[in-house]
Image 1 (cartoon, helix red, strand yellow):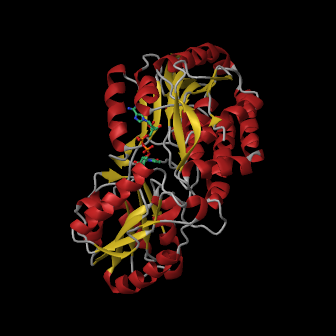
Image 2: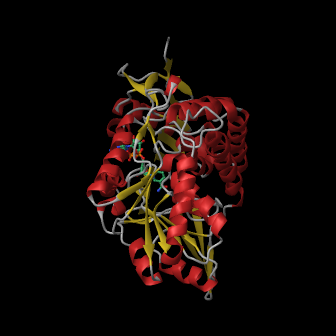
Image 3: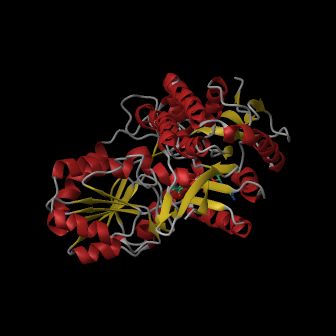
Length: 483
Ligand code: NAD
């Protein structure tokens, strides 16, 4: 069977890699290679930069209404191809088709629609002084910017960066994850049909160490918006800092879920199963350390394990599958190594802990049973390091002070989910938790206007709403004395 071939998208057209080399892309559910990806290099990034630089004067001087219309066309294009894109995302990533259809692809369209309309309302500040002086701040597009995204929510996170960058009038050189490149490739077709001028968006495919690095090292790409692992983020910061690039870094997490005895139990239980295992636990916002107030611990443990054991691990293309395949064999092995580590550290596996072999086309797929572990102290490696898979720990706590200390003990600070009906406790705890996002009695409820991002090693800067449009613009203050 002939394999599908992905192309770079440069200067409004498809482009083969200059080297002529390609990489294999696998389908996690089957474990087999199914398409080829350009193994692009620095020269391809340079070609993309040249196209973006050439397109910038015109794109940055179009009216915001014109840009808005084109981005809305892209949003419509994504919606019209929802089924095709959802299927592609599931094949590439291993996530259940139901998730691709209801979360990943709709959100990619929403990202474009949100920033297409946000730019129409984006305003800059003015500061009047008493003595006949006024300051006004101009916000100009930066120029050519780089957007680099991970594999866990491929089109969702790719568009979350590209849409505000384009809306603000920048031209973009972008790189999706080499592990899940297909929907970014399909997006380039949609952009061509939507009337996006050549060179405004360029997508270069390939390895992080080659393509990603070339984007970050490029002396004229003035800002980098990156989502991915903390170690990669640290490398990017080191390379970019001496060039004084603007940086937005959305990195790893080790999120706590804190459950009090007074919560709305049924709602909590159903949501915590989702917050632990959605997308096979491969969402940076998943709660992987679950702390339960002691009086509720045994009941929660019993009910939670029962529900988790009932989750259907299956072919992600089947409507009934709730848990799909992990994204790669390498990642599966990493997650399994953490289950082994948890056992070495004294943890007891309450459910899961094993690889699952399905029948039929998925016989060689990368499936893992959702895993719950107890008996581990908050400071052990299993509870401090990001696993990024369907593995959670549970532990009882006695006091608010204790659980806040445990929650804040990791080097990360992305998100936290709190379950309580005590209003003052909810406010007080939200104030003390060191994360960029706190959800109370809910999880992953997203208003795209709110600042999104993490503290500590979970990142630098915030995405979403005005934060993103401010990141992708350069403020210039003009001070006029008229008195
Ligand atoms: P990763 O850091 O390995 O890769 C992310 C992207 O960076 C990929 O496109 C990769 O090719 C590229 N890259 C790799 N090395 C590079 C380099 N030297 N220079 C430039 N680019 C390079 O991360 P991943 O494994 O794809 O994604 C999983 C990680 O992403 C997890 O740690 C997860 O928590 C994090 N994540 C964070 C958020 C958030 O919003 N904070 C969201 C999703 C995922």
